Each structure stands twice: as C-alpha cells, then as structure tokens.
Image (cartoon, rainbow, N blue to C red; front, side, top):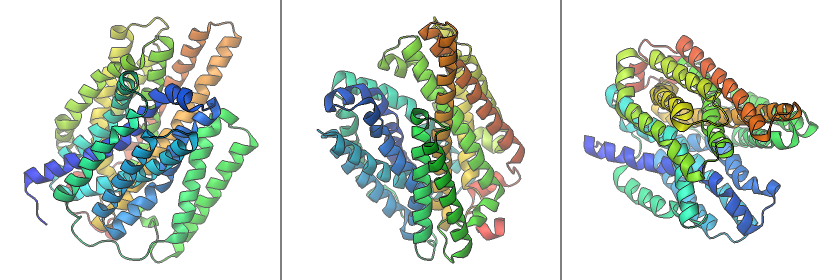
Length: 482
C-alpha cells in the first residue's frame, strides 16, 4: 500500500499520539499519588505498587511485544496494545479499591509495552527516504523527551481541578481516537514478516528476567542494595538472562537473534541509551524534587518550570535535529547534545537552597532542552539502522528495553546516592532542606557523568559512513550487515 506524503505524516502523528499516552502515563501518576493514597487508603509501602505494577509489566514485555509484532504484524499488535491500554485506563479511572487499581495498572503496563515496542517500527516503515526519516524521528524523539515533563504539568492540572481519577480517564477518548485513526491511516508494514514460531522458552526466561530485575531495582532503595533479598533477586535475574542467551544461541527461530548485537550501530546505540536514560532521569525526577521539596513549588509550577525545555526540544526535534543529522551524520550531534545535557546537570548540581528560577533553574533547563533535542534523533536512527524490516519490531523492543532499564537502574542508583548523602549531611548538623539539597547535588553530578559516558561512547563508536543512508533506505539484512 503506497501512501502519499500527507497521509504518511498524518499516520506518524497518530502513532506519536499513541506513544505520547504511554509516556505521559509513566509520570502523570506521580503528582496524584498523595490523593490516591488518601482516597483508597494505601500505606506508604503499598502505594509504591501503583507505580511498580506498571513498570514491571512494561519493562518485562517490551522484547516479546516487539518480536510478536515482527511475526504477526506491527499494526495488529499496535491496535491490540492501544485497546489493552485504553480498557485498563477505564478500570484505573473507576477504581474504588487498591486491588483493582494495581491490577489495572499492570494491564496498562502490558498494553504500553506492546505499543512502545511496535510504534517505532511502523514509523520507520512509513519513512524510507533519509531526510524525511530524520524529520520523523525528530518528531518521535520530541514526544518521548517532552512527554515526561508534560505529564507532570497535566497531572497537576487534572488532580487540582478535577480529581486523580481523570489522570486515567483522559486516556479513554485519546485511545479511542488513536485506534480509529490507525485503522484508516496506518498501513501494515510492507515487505516480508519474520518467519518462524514464537520462541516460548526464550520469551518466558527473558520476560521473567526483566521483571525480576525491574522489581529488584525499584525496591532496592527501600530494602537496601546490599541485603540478601536484593542480591538474590538480581542474581536470579542474571541467571535467567544467562539461560535466555543459551536458548537463543541454540533455537532455530530465536526471540532475539544474537547476531543483532554484532551490528555496531545497533549495539552502540543501546549502550548509549542505557547511560543517557540514566542521566535523563536524573534531570527529570531529581530536578522536579528539587523544585518541589527545596524551593517549595506546587505541582503545577513544577510542570510550568519544564516548559522552556519542552519548547526548545520541540524546535530542535521538529526541524533542527534532522538538518544536523543530514549535515554532520550521527556522531557529532549525538556527542554535542549529550555534552550540553551533562553541562545542564552540572549547573543543577550547584543550585542553592534559596535558588531563583531565572538564575538557578532556567539556564539548566535551556541546556538540557537543547541537548535532548539534539541527541534523541541520532540515538533512535542508530538503534534502528542496519536492521532488516522483518526485525524492526525486535530492534525497537530492544532499544526501548535499554531506555527502560537504564532509566530504572539510573534513577534507583541516583536516589540511593542522594539519600545516603542527605543522611550524612544531616548527621553533620546541616538543616533538613540543606541536607536534602546536598543529596540532590551529588546525584546530579553522577547523572552528568552518565551523560558524558553516553557522549563518549556514541561519539567514539558509532559508524558514520553510510549510517544515515542505512537509516533512511531499506535496511540490509542483518546477516550481511554483521
């Protein structure tokens, strides 16, 4: 099915709207947690499951969702994921008990994983010409980068003006519209689908490994990183991952062909994604905590504080980033963008207790907005380059898993470092707010190190010769690219 230019771009916007719902839902809930706790009687410990249930299924099913899209059709899986997510959003919105809300959040995570794993594949197949694909990835990068901070703003507005139920119910008309428009505008990906059966043993082991790892990471700060429980969970996840790799090396139709990681750009982009996600989470979550707990901002003011970076990311992602990639290739914009983001994190690491927005917040937001706007496009293009169309869903699932695991692990490590530093400063006699801010300073510095590591790895190892061509033309078979 050949689409004209206008229809392809409309299809892209529909796919981005579906993905935006998923990105928003990962952060919009955070603002409403106090209200949810009061209404449904959650304890501080059980309240974490409103977030953790979503993260577990989302992180666990990304790889399987991508592979199922390759086998059975990306559009079919996208529609299935949107349907699951929308129905689960209704259940979340009408929840009157803890059990119903947590269970519905788990189903939301499953639907979100499927959508995230195949949406990027559909976009890549819509745009095969290099310049147009770079622009399309810029739009998608803007949605991913800006969606999280938009979630904070939207969550604050809906919770303050209506109630926490509406942070979920707002998904229903959006999900219905995305489903209906996808049927009309989004074609099934052309070309051959992947062949073979679903690798059941591989699917079970890798999903269990990812879910155990996510659970261990998100609970690590609560129960302690050096405890037997955390260590045993991480060891079990590592053992399952080793079993998964052994299975993939033997079966005829593996869930994740190991040769995928022999592709230099694909492997490098995923490593960059892990470090960059860790740095980005340092920016988003820790700066939001600084604004709210140190400077005393309301949830709505926190969301508004992120608007400058969102607008800047929009300018770069929707035009400038694509031009930079076409002019300079993947390495230079990626390294420059991540370096600017690292500089923004370093500036946050000196923000004082009595900071002012124009002096102590806005410069960091500007640098981070420019950096994220420049870097996301080349990361996404590199992650999907050199992959055959019938494995694009798998490549999308892999890079989404890299971002998910990097973000979860990075945030947990940074939160643990911040808490430890805060306790140390409190013991030394600092005030509660000063100690809290000192903890954030350390975490911001480590986040900057993550961003620098991503810049160095990407700037050094990404292959530039032909990279944009591969990202824009039909990918060569993975076996030949290796």
